[in-house]
Image (cartoon, rainbow, N blue to C red):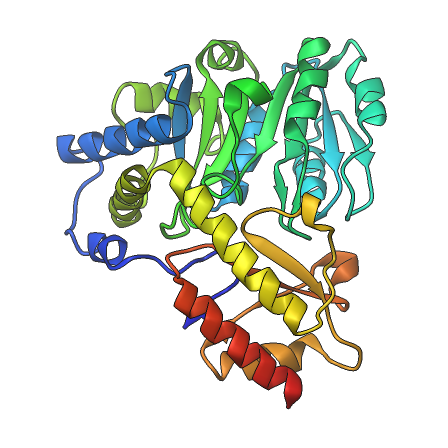
Length: 356
């Protein structure tokens, strides 16, 4: 089955084989070596200057995002959330669930955020951090995180970036962006399995976060960071998934992050050329689209269910719209270990289903 949904993704045989490396107790030195390897490879891939500390968590990307959001504020701080899609709204929902003071700068789901509104919100003295989604998977919108980062730096605020579906798919130079906490996961553009996520935290910022109130037992960045710096873990991790993530990161470093991003961009171009030939309408203009997912309007008279089922019968899984766009769009991701031949075969299947 070819997965054209934005995670889980198709992985390489090497990554699948890593799951079978055997049983291992997480308190043994062999797991300490495995964890250290993953953290080292994450840093080499995404923060090669060495100024970020990777913190691993067993859970989905949302678990790591919740850990970042609930760990970033002091007892008196407030958060500004940039929300122009389901995942920006999720950050706000996490803050609300944790009863954290939060101001949401809402925007249209198909447009970049209103930077003047972000600036007005960020300049308040009690605001300590600004959170933004890099790749808003709702529509495939790539947000201008560097612009948001400049606003945060200008006012002395921390910048939290949800890069769950963008790391290794779209460029994210952390120093240029000014990011302080970057949330990612293995099961998307890194091409591992879902179940282990992480937060890259600027080392100087982690010292500050360690003094903040701990609002969760399991999802405290300080708890996980302190243990991992001692080469251990506070709770039982997903050991077999760790083997697979380590192997996926080895593959990423062999390919090169820039080359991975270029491969995804080429796949997106191939697909989008095909969508144009089929007369499908794009939700976003070309300059706003990410490298890894394309949102399309459902053709008139078609339902997502019929389109999905017709394609699944031919070996391809697509993704429905979310929230207010659920009945109007469908999405096609090009994440994972897929080839140009896979995408060409999908376009032929899509043409067949649309003509049926």
